[in-house]
Length: 262
Image (cartoon, rainbow, N blue to C red; front, side, top):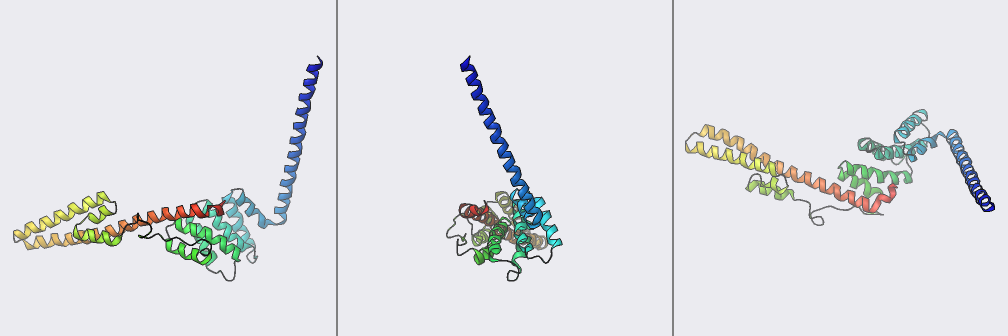
């Protein structure tokens, strides 16, 4: 009987200890929340940043816009352009993120501190890469980050998956459709080859019959298809290279710079 009572009391003491511990944690948490609310109430500029850190990006954007309207001359509002850029970025709204970045870098000498510019350049560069605006991304990066991590060069020499538009043009010149095959557009290449073959065969046939009028009309359309195929092959190569470069730069960003986004 004594053993049973001893075990019961021991369990009761453990349960009481757990309850007291949970109560203390709850009180501490409530005090921290209350202090944070008081801090936000006394300084409204902290609220949108708190929302951003909690992942409430839409609310953070709304609060930032409201504060920028209410305090147009407040110097702190310029730091909110960075948070607008970051909010839009994490929402994958890259067009608005790019607009925010463009606003930051349009008047860098009078508004923004170097720390804001430095972090903004990181997000703005990544946004531009997601929008396939590689040249502008490179320009922004070289201005603010190149000394820490040089911007990579994706070209034919160091990235063999890229295709040469000059080769595509030459292939299409000698054999219509072959430039499209070179860029991986096989269906378009087949169509281009057969359409050109039909027009050339038709024009040759009518020339043998001395019907130069119809032959001339067919050759006119053939020239359109011929040069159109050359242009299409170059555009296909550029599309392919843009896709490869985007993968390349995103991989580079992921390997070297994702720590800045955590």
